[in-house]
Amino acid sequence: MTIATAKRFTLEEYNRLAELGFFNEDNRVELVRGEIIQMIAKGTPHSVCGTRLNREIIKLIGDRATARMQEPLQLPPNSLPEPDYAVVRNREDDYLTSHPAPEDVVIVIEISDSSLSYDQEIKLKLYAESGIQNYWIFNLRETILEIYTDPYQTTQGVFGYRLKQILLPTDQASLPGFQDIVLDLAKVFPALI
Image (cartoon, rainbow, N blue to C red; front, side, top):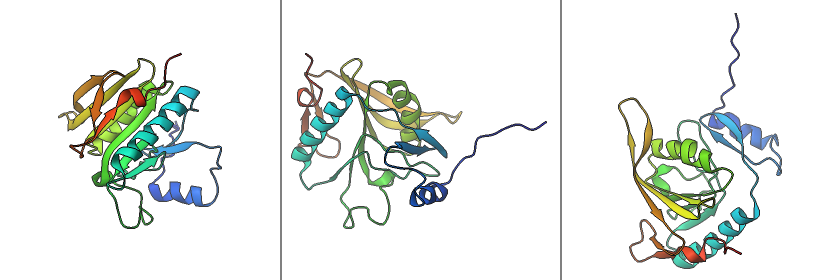
């Protein structure tokens, strides 16, 4: 009896497929634990939140770090997720020679409405396993910011974050790695009409 299994891709195979034009601009995909995952289309609130977040982060960090929107992170062994937003350490080549690795990441941010359960479960465990210290989810369903810190692994091999903090749109969030930077969440969440 033959059992069908899914093909898992290495980073090299995935990158080669991209180089060969296997994915076109309309294909929003990412590699997660060797699987090619079709990303969910962004709605208007998601896009607005991303635009507002980008505007505020760029103003606040200036040239002290690098802001990246929907750009890959290289997470061992075979993941190349494209978070909605990431702040990474500056590097002279601006990551031309390789995508940021976990040690380069200051914070990973996902903006979630239709992708909320995926971001709270799959992505959260992936980022924790990779040692990403700071993971934020702009939860548009509940209009809250979920802040996750201090990744851990149980003796059963399950990954997660020890600390979860909830902030409201009227709150301010301190940007990890920058003691003097505070993000006003009212300037990020889409205005409710």
